[in-house]
Image (cartoon, rainbow over all chains, first blue to last red; front, side, top):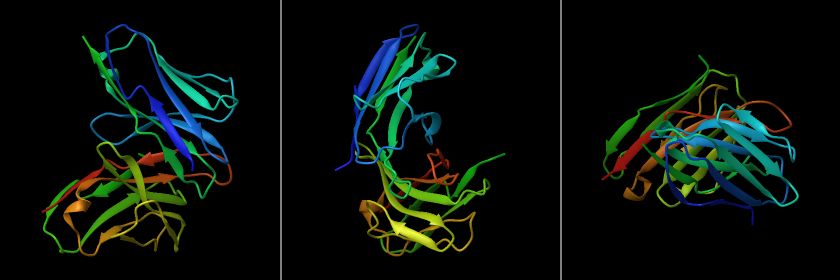
Length: 111
Length: 114
């Protein structure tokens, strides 16, 4: 059965810290891995990763995929209170565009 | 502005009273999907549509219906809502053909069934 597992489930840090969120997957037909940020509303798209070893970067956020070890990490440097959110990982398993979702990592950044 | 819209945003209803949640996208996306999100269970797909008149069940389709008569609209119908359908619902759309794509989410509809 296809599955996506995120860790940790919850994380509390202080402003300025750097955090690393993990997403591991087991799917039969991998096409891509996506990261989303969800604050108190709808998930918003962050990154899509299809190739191993190529870092995607947007400001203080970056992500990389390892297709051999079947995981991805999302890094956030110099965290701010506005980074507090649930970060969701999903994998496109190529089955009618169905996304397999992880349960998310809840990040709280304290001032 | 490219967006996915849903209505209503909040709804409190009673058991058995039919309701429809509308979803519309202005990005000309072929793919649309409905999810429900519950604490501890994450996002679960209800139904999806690959194109007009093409719909299929997701992981939790029981108690729901959908239709896709036009490319931009994908309403979710609850014929006889029950309290276990109390949830946060998201509509999403995705573009492109063949390779990978990203999904864009509507603002969500918080439904309470009493």
